[in-house]
Structures are given as C-alpha cells and as structure tokens.
Image 1: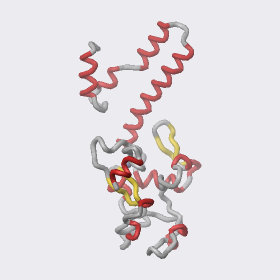
Image 2 (image 1 turned 90 degrees about the vertical axis):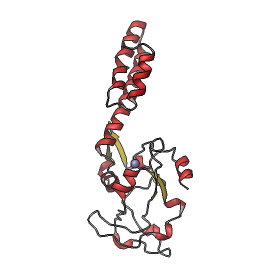
Image 3 (image 1 turned 30 degrees about the horizontal axis):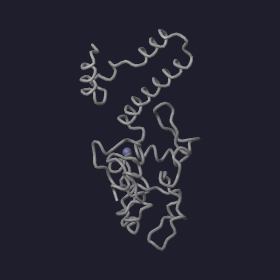
Length: 205
Ligand SMILES: [Zn+2]
C-alpha cells in the first residue's frame, strides 16, 4: 500500500509536500487515527480510535516522519466532538474534521502562501488548525521552501529580462546577476558537495 500511495502522491508528503523517498521510506499516515485519538494536544488519548478504517484506502496518506509522528500523531480534532464516530456503524459524514484531508479537499482553498510562509485563507479554522498542528510553519520547512522559492524567483526574473531585453549584453548581465553559483556551494545549500564538484569541473573559480 505504501508503494501505491507513494506513486499516487509523486513521492511527496501529503501535508508538507516535501519529497520523501530519497532520504526516508516515509510513513503511512491514517487521516483518522486507527489506535486512538485526541481532540487537542493536551487531551488524554481516547482508545480505541478509528480501528475499522485501518486498511481503508480513503483513510490512508503517504507522509513524512515529522508530519506523521512528531506533529500529527493521534490528534484528530472535530468542530463538534460530540459527533465523533465510534464504530463502523456511525456515519463519518456527521463529523466535521478540523484537519484538511488533502485526498478529498483542495488544500489551496484553505491554505495559501505569502512567499514561503503558509497562512489560513481568511483565517479559516481548518487552515489554522492544520498549519499549527502539523507544524507547516516549522523552521526547517520554511528554510527549505525559501530556498526553492529563491530559484523560482530567479527563473522568473530571467524570463522577464529575456522577454524585454533588446541587447545581448544586458541579457547576459541580468542572467549572471540572477544565477550565482556561489549560492549553491555554500555549506548551508542542499547537495553543496555535488555543486562544488560540478562547478570545479567546468572551471568556475
Ligand atoms: Zn511532511
């Protein structure tokens, strides 16, 4: 099942969108937790959880270890805890989960980004709860998104220059300003050892 979920999700975590499979096997995340649930982080663990959904495809997501274990865990808050399903005979559609289910909802309706930082659209509770409980604003994730955004910004700026440039020299200067190999060889850059070797091999001092 994990292999099928990974293919369906392009090897990305259902919550933070990070690529997982190059550094980790990834986890199967039960959207509705199977063993037990908590309404809030301070709540005690209520047992059992949604055990009858343990192998239900619609309840399964592929996720990274951090989103699954450290942040979400058994947390599964509902807008109205009294509506919680306790057995297979209860109707799940009576529940209003506060976590976004990326398999059945479009997360972009509820969570958008300002630069690399996610926010809840119009302060909606689902977006707020999902960002806070899953740690979607965690520092390491923000740093990673920020680095990716920088590349996108540079690509876009080069595209704009390319469209409006009438002089080859101006275009060359613009591209040289945007694409700075030194950035990718910084110790803080991902895969910097590979970047250094490549740039050395092509004679970049
Ligand atoms: Zn994740």
